[in-house]
Image 1 (cartoon, one colour):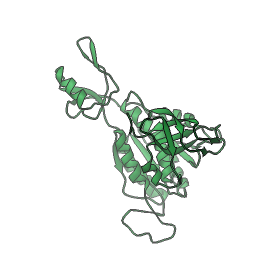
Image 2 (cartoon, one colour):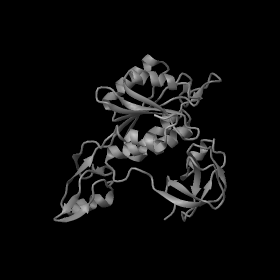
Image 3 (tube, rainbow, N blue to C red):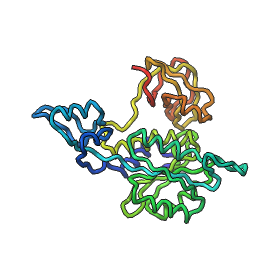
Image 4 (cartoon, rainbow, N blue to C red):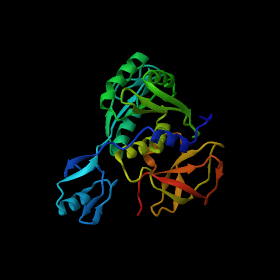
Length: 304
């Protein structure tokens, strides 16, 4: 791949290693929250469309036409782990200046659940290749997808890369996203389980999760749409971006969806919890002024 891999190129590569999980029939109440695997008809009339997330209204409709089971795709099982010698579990003391609290597995495990998958957070934090390999191999039996992140300073990237390379077919890319860094992806183990590594910095890790891992999980679910919705909105403040790199600025989309305000202090993790949108700045844009129309990825709808 090129020196810097474009976002769309990387996503295409990731989607090529995952596929919708095999469907099966679920009892009606158990199907709640799953994804419908087939179109459902009442006679010749289509009443439920494949790829739909099964909610209470779909359950009620299925019951009204006499269905006590629905064809669904299972929730993907996603294993999330972090690796690095200086990571410390929350609740434990930081004994050295290089120590940092392990953040990403907590962030990513709950993000996985919000997409609709079953998430397993690995409590162990391996700090050497042999230990990390054993942990990964132990998790393969219950994983449809494995996500691994390292330390904030990215010191553990080489450890993760060496370990994964010994387990399967792994590619390393340097993404054309500002402050993102390197990622690994590929398949490992006897079942060619997809694996992706994310940056150690929590902000970069979450941006990569939204752009790449979320669509992978949605693909495995067989969802009708795999991407977040996006809108055009007017900037309330000017912003700048590095040339040749794509940027995702955390912001607040107005209730009417017509304007968006970039948050201050973009290097602070609190912007992740404060934002309801990403402002997507292309590789060719370096300076945008107040009033410019920008593409906004909607993370949470707070407007109608």
